[in-house]
Length: 307
Image 1 (cartoon, one colour):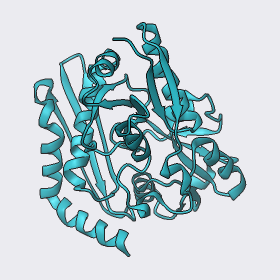
Image 2 (spheres, helix red, strand yellow):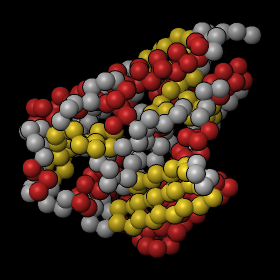
Image 3 (cartoon, one colour):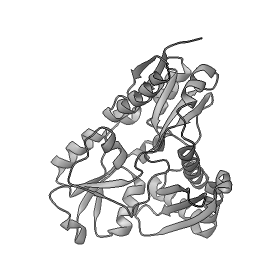
Image 4 (cartoon, one colour):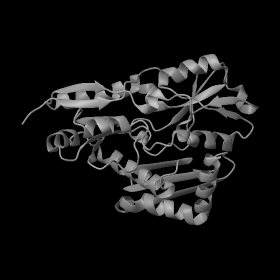
């Protein structure tokens, strides 16, 4: 059986780039494809911080529904937007090779404000908490919208800067010259990676898409997302994680961070383990964080976000 694979995506410039990237890879393998753009709830509701919306998979839910209704065959996501538990009937078919996992600061005028007081913008609790941990005298404003919209807002709002994922800006070639790589900031779990999901009963699409899977990225993002899932238990929280494979000694280096919402308190963990231990590394690391004060942290975070 051959069929045209209908690729579901959000309609932002970045999401369309990602879907086109997957389409080109599938085309190169001999498959025919069609891109179907669908607006997600996360793109429509822009007047509230993401964590206030309280919806799991705010950017993926619409595509999940379209897939389960048979309107699309596969969906392409920024992996960091995908809930750690996929809906019934939908499975991960591929994780593409990771691009940059870094966060970067796009700044207005200059970076002198880093030495004094300043105002930066981000919709991410993780970025906000890490920023305030390092720059406690600064203020963080909420910034929503797609990448282009956020860059435009930065120009008009009078903020000193805003934080973006480097991969997003690089993929659609709009990374401004006035940027600073935040090499001290630990990324969101799976930042810089793309995930493709399919209907669990669709063997044709699974076999097609699975050929795009990058095993090293799959392992590292699995560890990071396992850490996130074990810590949060359905609660949005400032959680950061990065796993990296070291070919020289066949090991995994992992760093995980849990912060209070205001950034004043932080629990971090770092370890190096043989590659053979990857399957439960995220789980055991999260358990260690929870046992070292993380459980109380998570309760405090839930209360803070309720108020």
